[in-house]
Image 1: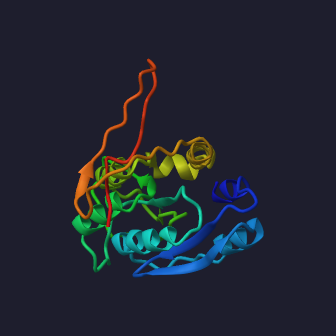
Image 2: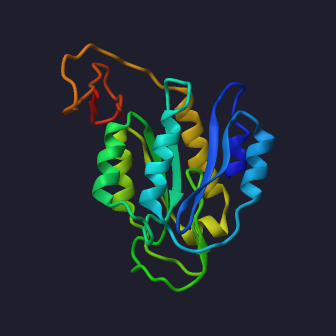
Image 3: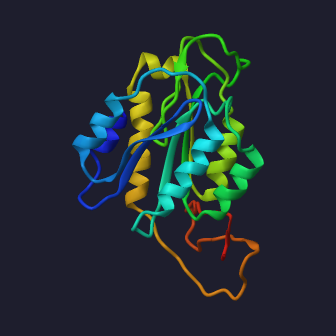
Amino acid sequence: ALKRFINSIKSEDEVFLAGFDAQPYLVQDFTDSRTLLSQGINLFSPRGGTSLYDAILTGLRRVKNGKHLKKALILVTDGMDTASLSSLRQTINVSKRSGVLVYTIGIGNPHRRYTKRGNGFSIGPFGIMVGGRDERVDSETLQKISDETGGRHFLLNTRDVVGNRAVLDKATQTISHELRFQYSLGYDSSGRGAYRSLRVESTRPNVLVRTQKGYAID
């Protein structure tokens, strides 16, 4: 599914690939080369640990260095942080002020308690959490991060993903489509420093507007 997402990349797009286990690490820096990104995916192997919050903050910093106006971070994980030095509150605060769309794909079983049994590995921002057992997914946290930034959250059951790879493929293709069809709106503001709430409405009926919930001018 991730390789199919990469196949949708066009010339001059910028994509980087990073992983996270006990700490985040870069696999492939910004490139529009499908070959390099596909090779990067093949390099991932199980290591254990999930520094989710640290990975999000590291990913946001790297994304903001991109040259294009529209920026997005795609995160695939069970959402269960086990190793970060950063807190959830810090992560959400930085995310909503970043101006970066954060798409989250949560993989796990929302009806099962989290357990550390079973081996697994995490990669991101194009990331996957694969465990030996169905583990609880923190969908609430992932949903909040996506909502605050104007992204979208997908919740997938581990058993469905393992049994049918088209389930994950549908999520990544939906994200790819959305990233191609977005509008950038702007206006002048005299305020600096403080975080300001933002709401965008459409006068057209039956139109769902999804955008970041606020902004901050540093």
